[in-house]
Length: 537
Image (cartoon, rainbow, N blue to C red; front, side, top):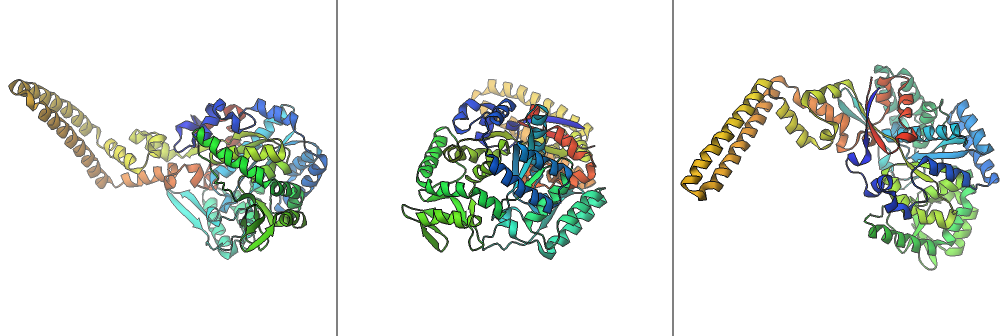
């Protein structure tokens, strides 16, 4: 497998805080408990204080969840290790259609690899994947894009979550099952018979976004023993109830700390990712099925049409904890209250809002895991490699956008003989104009500017002529547009990074059985903080 490593700062649109965390940790160390190193993970593991009673209760709940999802013996073994004292390496993602964007799988692979390395180094560790089933943003999970035959195919289920239900409870319906059959046929056509079977078996009409995602991941990562975690489980809410109560009882000092943290980030030159106001709390209420943010003042709290005095709402978290759900800043803290987390595998956006969550970790939990960046990948097929060579392009030039890409491709598509002629004649004309300019300047020095403008005009028109020649060639051959579409669809889909826009399953179908294992090797702790350009065999 041929691959090339890029630092994250070489990628477009990376958050400033994320880059500083990886490259200038001293600048942001006030916002995190540990630097992003394996030595820090070892220290965090040894300091971890996690109650045995909670460990046993959570392990039992997860065993039932994973059995329902169809995980295998390796996961059962890892759950037993978790119950006996293993630390957790955790990652997670929204439960997107057909596994969501590729980076969801990259997160899981990174957690698996880091847990494996820790275990080999003498710290028993297991990988856990938190499925964000409580999220109510259906728009983020109801569609997926596939790269197929040089073009993009979109599978998109209907919207319609005006009530604000958690997506983990929304059924796929007949259309979801139909899409799964169509997608499975595409996978099988590309040699991915087993993947097609996984997909069609996981995405049935009666499944929800959460259960289907979980069943697919259970099958994909059966050999790696990935432990899946569904936070909608009433049992997990019951375990987390004391933390919910604490968060509401301490709402006022927590809110002050979060408002101050936003100012600290701004003074350091960064933006707060999650807006916090004087009425913010850390919880949602789901008593009517819908997930509604709880806001509060000095006395009463509100969610939708409901309102409660502070003491009553605090008590309600004890009576019906399953009706409360953490917001984005509180979610990782709840996760790490429920789990003995030594390392949390995160993406660029997550790392940015966890800088705000740090004050919640400190106030409510008294500990915080090490934040490690997930591995990132851009996968290249043979045709894309050939096209980049043909037009003298780099992946970064494709990322730059369609206008610049088309300009470079048109210029490169001019036949070599014609291109050499352009270069030769352009130099001769420039030399001729320069000589003529010297003679004119002797005659009248005020005409120097006119000469220079004339020179630039000639150069401009020659370049225009070169590009028009390229377009004429394109019209004759009819291939340039399809080449551009292939490169953009694969490397810059929807003007975003491949890993954020495309589903990984079609790539795995073409790669074969060893694809996941090859990617996992590149998730090594020695390669943390890199994005890999990988050429598929």
